[in-house]
Length: 138
Length: 133
Image (cartoon, rainbow over all chains, first blue to last red; front, side, top):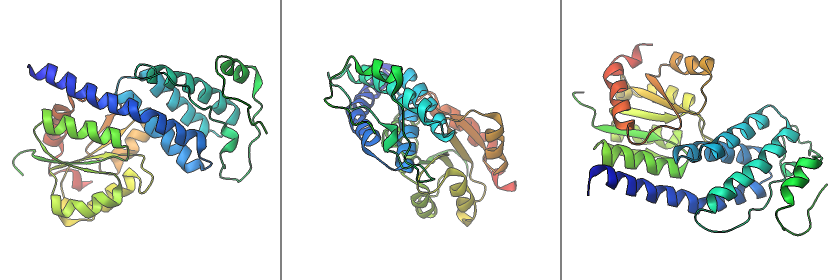
């Protein structure tokens, strides 16, 4: 076996490991109320997805991180909806699953105000293809 | 310090640590120590005695810049090149990292196949001089 094919195989194994852990990463994002945990997980997802060649997901995660830093919850929610679709797409290369939406309104922002996010038309549009049961909207 | 042999990688993401270890150990044939955070790196550095440190910028327990400052206080780390890894490509923030005394910056996502050679360039450029800033 050549050195390059050996590299490809071993790198593919690491990429599979990343894909296997993606649902866990997403579950952390969708369940945390901590701004710090949310920001850290987004940043890690951006870095790891890019490293394994999933550049659209990496860019979406970076965009979401930027919206988070700019304190723009509506834009952040839109990015998270797009990011969910992107993550679902790459997870689908390993297994068929649907991910729980991330509701940014869960996050405890630094000023301790709980943000009210108007779901808006784009939010509803992204949910038309999925069935997660009743949405808990504030 | 005659050759680049031992590399310490400080990165909080487990998947990225695995790729760093794979790339540098398997391809670069370096001796590699991976640390999940700055505090661990500061504790391990005097024992591992790395020839070069790859350091993530954004980490939850201790940031990359703060880790660099602490590492520079260790006698055994004098002159050891420290290279930041960051996804942030804003020129101003990159210059700020160099002003801290970093030898260089590798922008994420890096190429696992070429990383061993990339860090060698930084090592040859930065050995013995990084501490002079």
